[in-house]
Length: 464
Image (tube, rainbow, N blue to C red; front, side):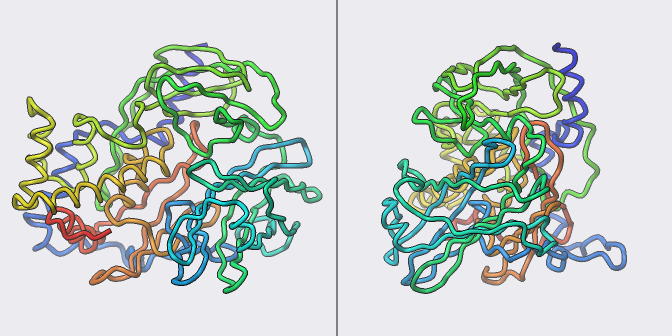
């Protein structure tokens, strides 16, 4: 059984995992090149007709999605309005004709306070959905209004969660579900697109991580030692086979790194376990876990198990790693080899900020707030800060607009001072662990955008 799983992962990780590249090499490419020849040498010519990042054709949704990337899709809050600020959705199959949709939402009042009352949310928003065959097909397969009430909207301390059922359109095996939230006074809309499947359902379409109160968790991570449940809407008891892989995946490489991807490394099984769905279990060790109902299946459920504080990062030996995106090779080497990591980490930030403790403290908080958010939003088969999306989010923040189709997602930045409109295109790639794995298309022309922002982090000039 282990051999079958091992071989399957060799093929999968060829598409989803970068090869082993040292932190020093990556840091050198990202910063040393800038401070030396990068600013003085013209960018490498590209083939005629190839679009620059700022001109890359953007994916077109059936209807545009204006969003900070943070929530897969959302709209920015306008002054004086109630506004939905983030949306993240998932579906689970109920039966052959119905799926149940779960959406974690955040919203703000006109004064900027978080909406925590389901009744307040229901009184200020109208919700409807429409289904299309594809992102590029406007034929309506189905549509309807969603009544908001205490029965289908709840608040768990972090998110408002909306739950509703959608019936299968005639002869449809899958559809694009576009859900729209409209503020009742202004008509301002927030939209979320979600691919739903009605045909032969994979394991992750039927089962997902639940919390102790029976609410689906729309994330790919858990904390070591926590009591977990993998369940479905029908509370079906089923044996799942679990495999643990202990592997430290590399962080994302520079957006300008256009070198061919190194040959990937395979994973080997560290340990195995079995669980029963809808029954509590504990995963005491950190690592990458993969659950299957049959060891010959192609798809399963992936879960990153991290330390107790994740998605926060608090231990000095872990804090030094995400600063890779704004550091030189020398700095990374000194941090990694320092006998006292905490003191070295403090010296690093103070030296960048010319000894100004207030600026260092503010900049460090801003940076690691983004690291935490990247972990929360983008963790897939590895921690969110290591992903391509996580890297862009940490350095540049949430995009001003997101456009998506079946194969790609484009983050548009066009509201930054002294920076031209820039697009970052992420291509959806097959991944055995998760359905939403994306890889960045890298271009050398990102240098004029990337380097000044990294420099702003290094001088404490970034404002949150």
